[in-house]
Length: 437
Ligand SMILES: [Zn+2]
Image (cartoon, rainbow, N blue to C red; front, side, top):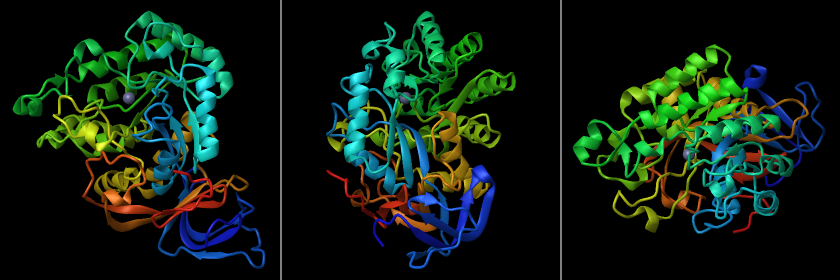
């Protein structure tokens, strides 16, 4: 039951939102591709019994930080793609805030080359909006596009100059690239550690007002309308941002947004114990914001989920809250958290939850994958939606452990993940031959 280019998955619940499929049936993979439903099964095809399990398209994450080049003590393409495979993901999009930043074609190609050599899932990358992510000068967006960037972003930072942002949007549109923006007016967040509200007052920590995000969201909606560029709002965290976005989308403005599993599952109350693994950017907000994100996902205002997988090592995070870096890992917990919050608590159907993690993110950036279309490469995950497991440090494949779910029990887990019909992950183990490190 190791790597195989052809196999039959027997008796699973096959969910493929792109084709409206949700039924118990067999799924045949032939020579690494999804076979049409009526294809006769060739004699000798290995059979995998998957009764009681879900068979879904491999998950797609349009927001990960693999820290290569420059900070590979936190993560690299090998460990990051292993974490992805273990979480049921078969395709990820890397952010360009590496060291040096991915603001030129050479760095971009070196990341794709590393992914080719060491990655166990499919890897795309983005390029920067500005040179060295300094927010001052336009990055060479045309040459980044030609080198294979799937979008441009200064994620982690936010271009504060509106004139420059307008110029970026105009160029990105010319080259057909979406602009992914991390929305943060930095004049409002200096020294801020957590969401500004009751909890920041109680804990005596410097607050980060929601307006810091909303001001940039409003700026981006206006610039998308003005330039016709597709601007995508990353890791939305505020209720007012969702309202502004809903109104703009209703008018046909080319704007989209993502939400992270942690922003829909947790609130600023998670900081009560001054836990650095609940410190992230944008910060976890109060309950009305969390609710608005769920409703934004429900009515389609927010297009998809994305993890913002942001590894930091224990010794970096294990300091006073003021000094701890922002961000948490998310690839290995995204699916169970989404199932818990959206399906079990909020009543989203299973296909709807799968859609938010597969077809929707793929479509948003025009990536292949995210479906079980006949003839498509067999990128898929077999999932046990009811398996409970504890997020122990030894369970994780990421090089970092910075997650608020460490030591907690979650329900739902990828059992096996295949890329191009080749099993790369099964029951806690990475199987791919090129899995170094
Ligand atoms: Zn960000």
